[in-house]
Length: 628
Image (cartoon, rainbow, N blue to C red):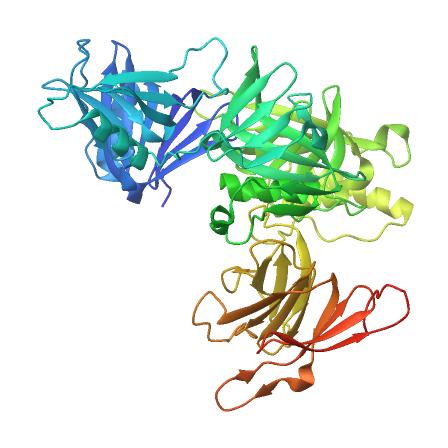
């Protein structure tokens, strides 16, 4: 049975105009300017209220589970009628009118409703509702006054006005017993406002990378709920709630990596908007300090440390992923003829790099272009069917035609000057994504002819799909050590100071991540039976009760014990003395551990007593590279 669907061509979410789609599964809103999407599932709907704002404008307020509200604005009378009918017939719920106080009164009651703070005028209705997540600070400038400070969002257009501060007067003899101090305390608690708001968590100096869009060097500071970009001419403050997702993409044949921050609403320089921020990072080894206490770092479960060391792109992606709570995607399965993850091409007169990801195209950088596969009507290979060897056939173009939604016009994007050698891999990849290729037979014939002339290998039938579509790879962090279980069914991977266990048959995480230390990096490990020995810098830890096969009976997401110690020198290698691993009737007896240290020293460590039993040291003045 085909899914019923209704489309409203113009609906605003915040400052962004987009398309609102109604179907059997709920509501879907998609921005016209960026790749931002908002979904409200049918089972999460609690109520739908409409209200008239002036003679021709209407609002739709949707309340979901957990008390969160979503508001669509800029609707017309016909849109409201369509939503009302669809809600009743398809979603099985009536849409009611929300009473609004529009007389201009400024006296009423403050009420908390879910994630909003509402100002209600008696016998008239709601005069104003304030989302609590927009409140940056709450203070008492006077005995009976409460001051609300709001996050300043630089994604708002420069010619638009935005509310940054509001003061409320609460008389001491209010009928409901509310006091100014009581209201302030409740707002601080419900809005989850930290009392320490001035300290940044991480500071990235402008010398660490260059922004391609907006062009220039910016210092970046990460705070609890927003980031700041400081440049010579422009400064920006961007709320994490305005960040949709991030991408970590490696340039082909380059030592640089692009870190892309996709926004729901673009930042602006005058009239120019930037929905994607592209930060170019060199793959240098760096050290970055995190301005958090040991207790504050614990909530990141070992993913963030007091000092982050490693490749700059990996550290930046890790910080953004866990501090912001946003997903960071990496390149998918596509590879070029030379093994790269992207193809060089041009859009109009600007050259750049095209990344065919698992669910979308991403072109960097001018203009940065993002196209979802689900929006594509068809693709077409152009200028490919020339004779092999002629100057005209060394390159080809890829035309991507996107379908229109509602009153939104269809549009085309041409990625030109792609190397002819990329055609087999690119066409095969697009076919596997079930995209319609208009002239596939013609280009296949040309590819076959050219391949025969050049003696190229035969390729698989491009009409065969390669498998179901999967999401882009979710970035976890830089892998610093790997080890397989004895039967090969499990893979133990170290990322920073955290140990991950994966099922090799399907690539899923077998147990929850295991934080080994509070800081540092695991550089190596040794595994024997259900024991894992991890080492890095001067730290050493023995993990017991580790799953050994996919049939292991995992009672909890944490190991039974982690025995850790710190050595006097840098650890170059460590090994379990497996001959000492003995299993009696009750438990696994812990083996001795051989620890190879720099400066020609080997310790024999007993994890049961946490003591060093023996020390061996060579008298030669050399450095031990790797103990045998």
